[in-house]
Length: 120
Image (tube, rainbow, N blue to C red):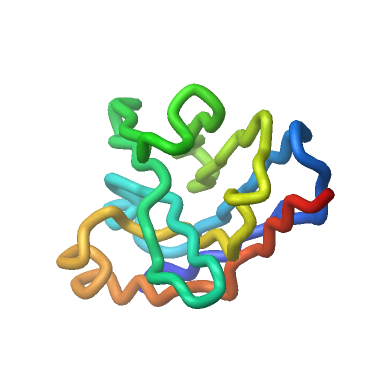
């Protein structure tokens, strides 16, 4: 089983930056392809970015060039550097495995998330 704890969310102004962290504990084998997700009120959870163990990354188009996902496998921590934040980035941010099959096999339940609010 893998336990996930997100942190770093805050209320910021448009154009500001934030760095989110996700601390994982448990099986290192399950800390494989990881992703950041977000869910805004009234909307479905969406994938924001993902990263492989080799460092390969993918981003949803709306954050490409502004967000950077990274990881430190030595401490099983996932990061999301968010620059030039926009009001539409406001959401609860979660981390988890990119694959639903891995989430099920490793019992990777969703954490409490961290709230990012970009307001004017």
